[in-house]
Amino acid sequence: SQTIHQWPATLVQPVGSPLSLECTVEGTSNPNLYWYRQAAGRGLQLLFYSVGIGQISSEVPQNLSASRPQDRQFILSSKKLLLSDSGFYLCAWVSSGGRRTEAFFGQGTRLTVV
Amino acid sequence: GENVEQHPSTLSVQEGDSAVIKCTYSDSASNYFPWYKQELGKRPQLIIDIRSNVGEKKDQRIAVTLNKTAKHFSLHITETQPEDSAVYFCAAPYKYIFGTGTRLKVLA
Image (tube, rainbow over all chains, first blue to last red; front, top):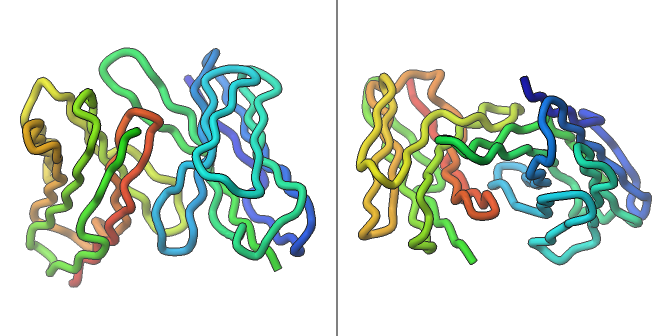
């Protein structure tokens, strides 16, 4: 069966420091991968999605970037964090084909920028 | 691109009452409409979905209805219980964009 791993679970970083969040998927090939951010009490904001290695689509201009160096690996990065980057970051794999198009989420990373 | 609007943003109901959450989408080509539930501090999980070839789908106390002409679909929860308290999201399958979420509180 397919599983999605995301780490770390929590992170406290100072303003101006770099960021790297990693997401990996097991049990499937060529997955559609997504990064979302959820501010406290708010909705799921789509940040990036990728349909294949090296293919990244950005939905919101900001100081974050994403990369997909391997088929089942999706990385969210920042060179210099801002206070406004605090939030709950979720990686998701979306299954396609068949009757259901379901998003499976990682456990999430709660990022606090101080 | 696809745009999804969700209402209301918060909803409080008495235990045992019904709750209805509505989403409106813009892409008339959309043919799949899921609903997700996110409990506090946890990841969202799919609870029910519907394809465009049917108008309603039920699973115990939850149901989803679809009006393709008006481009909206709704989540219905009957006989609400405290464990239904959570944030609910609809989604559009194109780019998997989520609605803004509805925080449901079921009051005991």
